[in-house]
Image (cartoon, rainbow, N blue to C red; front, side, top):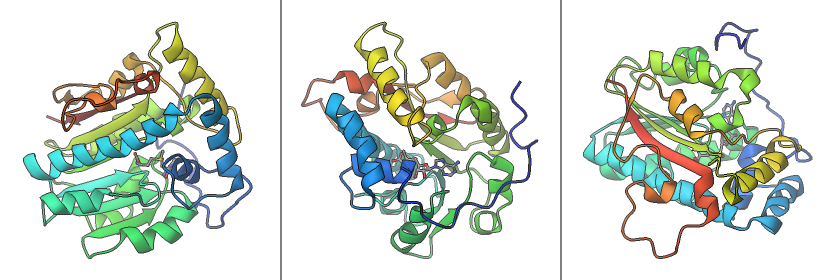
Length: 281
Ligand SMILES: C[S@@+](CC[C@H](N)C(=O)[O-])C[C@H]1O[C@@H](n2cnc3c(N)ncnc32)[C@H](O)[C@@H]1O
């Protein structure tokens, strides 16, 4: 049985040195998004997937577009002014704080990432105003995140906030207890908080969707990067137990309040990720 999320050995310090020879999640994602902060080892992972499934790069871009729409809703319509963005990733075209502060001038955003490239390079680009922080820490340790002085001194963790878990829990293997980690976060969140959630999905269609999920999982998780797990809708729904999913639920990214009609037909890659926004009552 998986141990409770924080009933484990003390948290090791996050890595401070960059290993360019081993692909990292943040840098591989940057390669998928067409960024510039990656090495040959990261490009090799990207190319292995891209040669077979070039639509996966579209899925990476769809993730960022979904994130913008979700933050726009949460900062604007829902009026949220505190965001804890776990697994921030390398800076991209539009980041959480830019969108949140556009729709709510009071919004504060704390980013968390374990990757030393994000910590070094991202800090300069993501901490561009007094209302933004970036902390290098391990998101699989919810109690450590809550107790981190740079987070607890910046956000009011006893007031409703938005927890961003976009593209993060699918990098947590079953052996590290993703269910317990999510449960603990949901316990820690004050009522009235939201979770913006996106996770790789195995559509269990016995066809092209599952085939694509299995192939990409094999490259990501069985390869040197070491993570990238495609889970079922049932598992993803269970991760959000104790919250209420907002309309339209846990859906393909392109189906979560799109900006208008789809100009391109959706592809099989659109089936291998689900996203939604949930509220803790
Ligand atoms: C696929 S990227 C997602 C970036 C962004 N959230 C998005 O949805 O576009 C996943 C990020 O999570 C970070 N990450 C993975 N495991 C982590 C951990 N245990 N603690 C903190 N960050 C982690 C990686 O370094 C990477 O930057």
